[in-house]
Figure 1 (tube, rainbow, N blue to C red):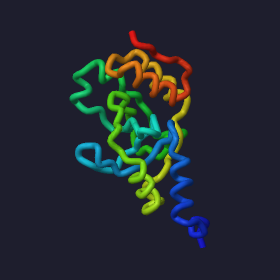
Figure 2 (cartoon, rainbow, N blue to C red):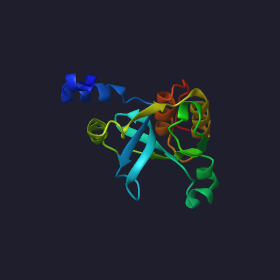
Figure 3 (cartoon, rainbow, N blue to C red):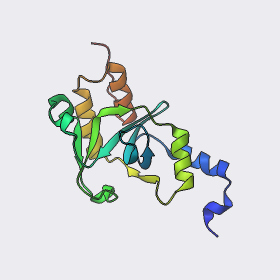
Figure 4 (spheres, helix red, strand yellow):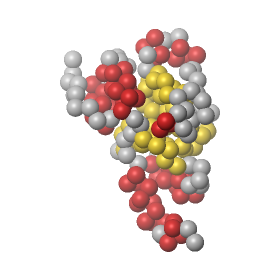
Length: 160
């Protein structure tokens, strides 16, 4: 008998909910991307839920726009990111608020061997994300503040 079989669905839901915190990397099925599909994402904010996706390629649309291109943070499939199959990019140019935390929890309950927490964002990538967000002009001061505060930096951005 597996340990999880001793826990009710309600208890497992609460454990998963409490685990979903900023900097956590998930493997999920996302309906808010085109086309919908399996994705790795990083939780940036829990309520409301906001994520950055990890992509294996940079979209040509993004490559043609320097401001968006600068917001792509490379990550490689080694160390804490061994779950990646190839060199990838954290897309900090698209903060997605389109996911539902209850849907993610249900995915993790129904297919825990597939949809799961894969790791936690490491300091090297956190520092890079904070730097590109702080210098970006695509986010409002409120959005910058939320992203940077949730990733652990003490800087705040007032209206300028």
